[in-house]
Length: 142
Image 1 (cartoon, rainbow, N blue to C red):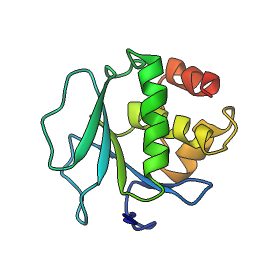
Image 2: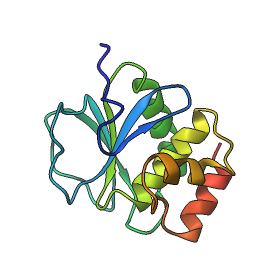
Image 3: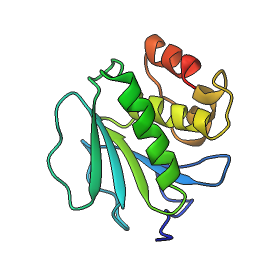
């Protein structure tokens, strides 16, 4: 499979490696265009079923993930799959948890952890990574 997002599509983050990952808020309608091949959902409770392959991480709003080891594995999987598939990372609003996950994925892709929040705010959403503990989580991720 060699599917990918359009680099100019709304909510699509281009990583330094060139891989593209779409971030979004699940409270908004599904964007126009192709569906994801794989999605990583960051919510306090299990999301409804979707037509594509997905993985759920228990991650309450404004908080940190419940299982940090599972989170690290899921973020590595998302980065790996983004090389050949359309990958989506989403939470309720698409800013805090999604931004935090995208910043951690950027760290895995080579962005220094001290610069990852700024990278995601510049290339994804200006309000991404909402809380001090989310910013600290990114700085310590690696």
